Length: 312
Image (cartoon, rainbow, N blue to C red):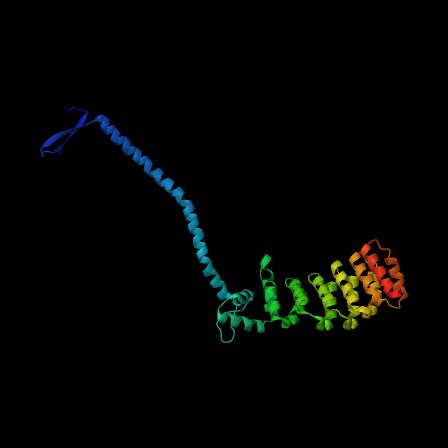
């Protein structure tokens, strides 16, 4: 049956090969049209969702590209750094970063270059090493300088006043100087007295290398015992104590230190006077006062020093 006016007729081939009439109603057309409209709305929505999902992926892709670019940037920066070539080697060791890398490398050329660089390291290279790294890696360059040994001492002295490398240079001197360097005590004492960056390290170095044979430098240590920072004064006064009777040349400095506001300085002064104050009435009188000091440590050392001086 065909509904005229509200239907459409098409011819189609039937299963038996003959033609037959196919009738489609109006509701069927509306259904098809509805499906088409739904598809038209769904397709843009699908692309929008796909775009939103793609944004994080694009961000990760950008990060990956940046990471891949880092080696190239590193190679470029390395190429821009001035590089001194070690004889017979093409491995660059022109700055602290390259020298540290060469020392850590298993490459024979790198090892050869690092040894050559250490042998010819000048003040600029040592300063670069002493300021190399940050945080927990700050001591990496310091260890390299210490590996150089005593040849690094002159440059370390020159760098004591350097704003960035001064403190580390003081640490180098503390590690490398020994009692055989007692002739350097005046320079060390001057650093301990006035250097705001390396003063304490220098005072510790003075205590380390002071010995009875360095009595000629008692005056220099006495000046530090009076005028250095708190901790520096303690070490310089203790260094005078290591001079034994040779510290008598700095007797006035020790008597002044016995009245210092820092109990650590007073304690070291009392102990030093036990040897340096022999035959001095002023030392005995000052120690009697110190024997009643509010600090138990100072009082104890003053009493021991009095016993050494007077036998009582």
